Length: 114
Image (cartoon, rainbow, N blue to C red; front, side):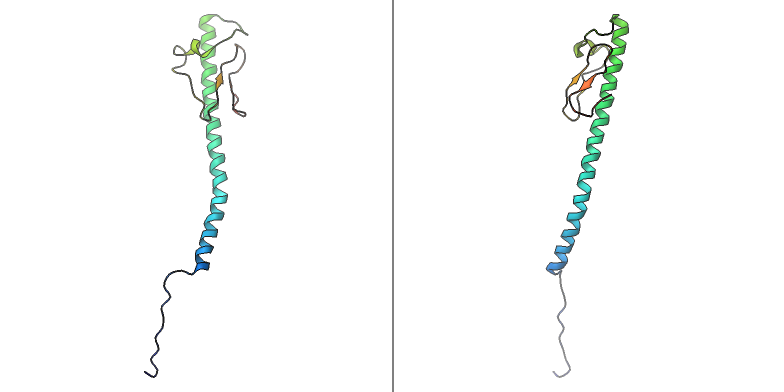
């Protein structure tokens, strides 16, 4: 057996290598999650603004047909289904108020404004 050596093969990963990979993944997630959250919030806000725009257009059509004047109250039942197919829903769970004639409709979520 002289001159004959057996070498052990290194199989698998060491604990340090695994911890290093987990740390890198953690840092990547810490960077990515706020970006995804911001993108989701921005998409919800944009969708809400489009809904408010549809409500405003329906109000403008309603005022022409019904001969209403500025300051007259409007409710969603007067707009649906003749001027807007259905009552839009805010993707961030806000509630829409069409507001009186001459005012933009509003959403109860801050930042969701026309």
